[in-house]
Length: 412
Image (cartoon, rainbow, N blue to C red; front, top):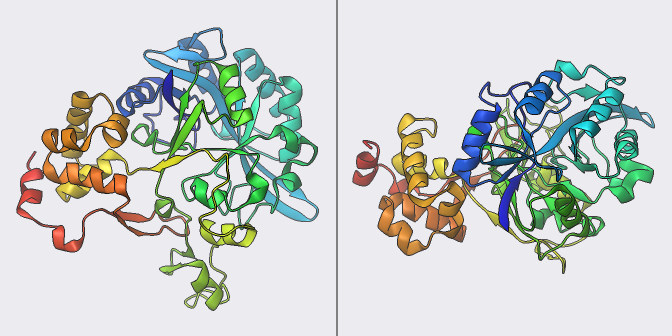
């Protein structure tokens, strides 16, 4: 069966996360989006784990169910540690096939730090040691490096990461078969590194609020069970892993280089011209994902490996509605329209990916339909994100704004 999965989210027990990140709201928004399978996130937190054990139905195949949504047991670990005289900050996602395995993981990891301090605990544990512990507990566990290009907390981060996966995971490297690209990069950027050819690239939302679930996701055509998904990821099976759903990477918070407080936003070339120094504060700028990819790439832009998993760049439906109406995406009328359109077509991803242009034009306000069609064709304008500030996507040019239809749309 074909289904969409978002493996990386956080619960209400994680820092800077919405109090609505509970099972009811997660399941509700997964249904609206058209996502069948969601990672639980945060299974290391005792209160969240209690809720999961109490409310999830164990399907006996490594997956669980709440209402109409399937769940897979996941958690993210923030490892901060010193190695060969340097400090590293790496985030990794752990997948577990059972609560029994989760309990054993939590018992062991509690020796390295306080698991109850945050849904994503900070532990003083080397990533290679973390991997060894996880795989020793249960060989069916999966460990996937999170958002691997984020400057401050990732495998290849410019501020705190490694140049090679093998330098990070050492003797455990062969057991790392997938990586999460993160919001600020997409697969084509990662394809420029031949060292990642054996790696299956996945994409997830890393959502901290229900509405952002699925902003990145994975589309499979296989059985909904843990071991099948493990095998698909492990073998990079193009027949069963159809494509990933991606942000336009420029919209990510760390695509370009710069200083947010100084208002400096630079391309890699501009950073090179300024020798990496901010002209306003005379401090080094935060080196973003695009620049870091350029540093490590051994292939030109546009290279596509033979066995690459395809991807689609999308803009969330609420953002398209908001721009078409000329209002903030948090406005009540945006959610009202969103729910109305989803009720008509079945899910957000059905609208963004599958509904024909003819049906969009026939069934939606013309400017919203036009926005979706332009997005599918990549006809957009983007001001890239930098140093923790999201990029800004614009579908309609300034000359198309403040039209009579915009004013009419804002009334609905």
